Image (tube, rainbow, N blue to C red; front, side, top):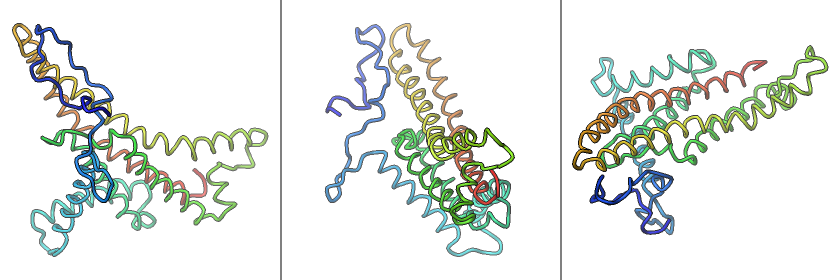
Length: 269
């Protein structure tokens, strides 16, 4: 990225001043390195991801370091969040008996995805880390490896392939076609859509927030003030909507992860 391609825009650029609207684009997702550690460049999304990890670990450490029978406020919030994922997602999809061992993984995934999303509306940060495809892809890869490994561990080599490919002798002549489709769906399309679903929602949400935010400033001149007010209202509305979407996307990501694991544990998809 060249030095002049930054997320910032010219603050003197307004309607009727002769400059065009500084529309957001892919350059809004590119950042110059903020630090270099041992030759490794760290940019803003990396920093937010690291900070998010520290916040999550720090919060749960503080909440459960010294648990009490009558929980304090911090422990109560921590227990509520943990229990929401455990009972509301893992137990509902996988079941209590088989799902208990996967609760720590799913709780970690849920809160990590959620905080990477919520950076979008945090002042100064104002960027959802999951709008960069590498982060959802890495998380989806973790789920993929767990799912495939668990499938073969549970059913053995031959049984694992039968589970993945949906092998069923009763299908007769169409069995090869079904197996080919299941192979494509489960081993290629599934991890792709798992990552893209999260990425696309956060990418689009950030683009809308940036667009209405820039428009509010750009229109803040002369008669454009009226339209600037309407644009600012959209910023507020979209911010509230993003709060909802951020939580929903974390929920859906973990819900799908649980459904994949449940499929690995069952005899059929």
